[in-house]
Length: 317
Image (cartoon, rainbow, N blue to C red; front, side, top):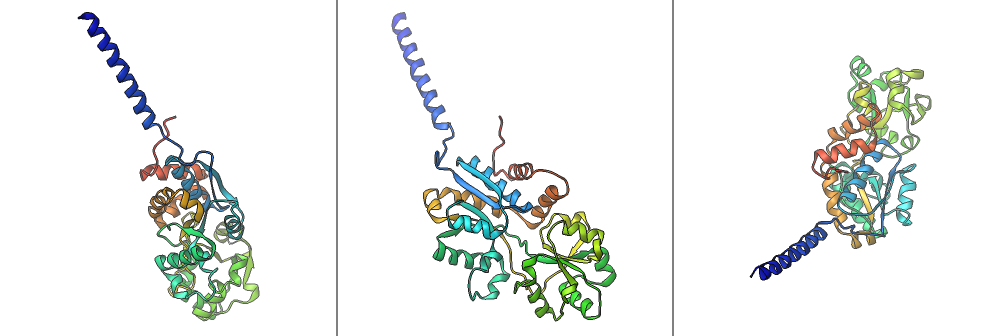
């Protein structure tokens, strides 16, 4: 009898051991695309760095093998070319830039988050087999900013106020991006919509340290063109002028993927949907400020945000 019990006990231990081994194997995280990494890229700007790190971390957490090319491209044209040519698999861009690609697009579509996204997404899928997967529900558009002191002194809080200031002989020295002075939705569009005209000497081309230059009044600069989600707006006590006529289009950040990659790995869509749809303008400005003025790394900022939203699990290693 003792012999039978001993045999049964050994058998039970063997079965239990096998069960545990199988359970352990089932729970082990598998790489979904092992040996076939997806390259994730962004432009080399602060917001691109933060959002790029988010994409990489969220996808890796979900089990995807990723090659991190965050901050990889100077200018949106280079990044888009890389996406079209298959040099990268996912690239983050903005809806406003995408709409520029569509000849004869209805400008009314520029002004709302959803229509701006839907129109460019439909066009790019049909023409280039590129899929705009989702978008963050905020607008990081081109805008004009002045210091709060200037705004209060001259009662300039919107582009309508700015036009009045110019037309009344107010002095302007504006630092701008080169593309903005010829873009129909840039300076020419603002001048036409609000009824003012800057002389050639009223603006200078430059992109580096614009917020700081405005804050310090370097070389007489009293206005700049910037991106409206800049983290340096609160740091340097700047005021972003309202654009009530919505001359500047909606620029919502969105991850774009090559169609064949999404067909192979459709789960990528769900992962990035959750990340991008969770971000508000206030949160993005705060994160940009942490990078631009507090010296935190994009990696640190992205990880903290994703953990706070429950979008990734904490690495216990």
